[in-house]
Image 1: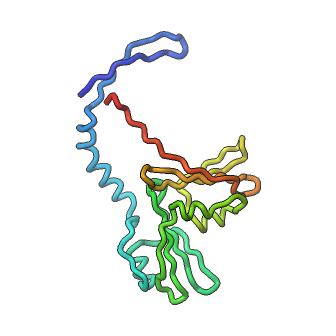
Image 2: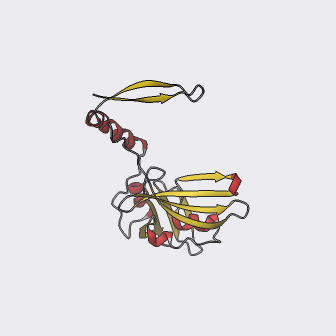
Image 3: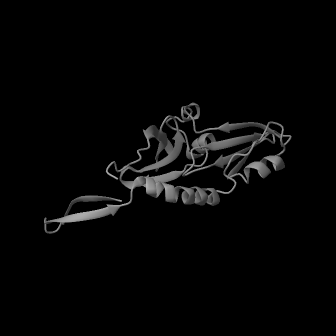
Length: 188
């Protein structure tokens, strides 16, 4: 155990009082809680792991391995696109393409720079959703008449890709890539 001391200022009286906080050593915390956190995450996302799927599998085999899709889009030719978003905590969204014969022809991980580059100003919400899938976070900013959709993804560091929509028109204003900042107390 380490002991951190500091000051706490009362905002109403502007007086200062000493504060002592006892913090367990970081290694102790991680050693005790990491197995519990891992188990909780595994149990809270059943069917989220992408099982081994291969071109040519029929839709029943794909669903048995990957679970039920979040969204199914049907093409005029009888093809389908199955969407598997693994957000908000996950960093992948898979699109499984099934041909008119109901067999898998392709699987794509769409939270990549290649697909982010396809999102341009003036696109509708539905057009963005077809490219990137369901966003992990949706935020509204009434003062700016803006709605922001965010996806977490992984480069070298954890990142966010944000799409800003004009709320009144429902069209993309702009996009933004932002590094996810994880705060760590270096004094622990």
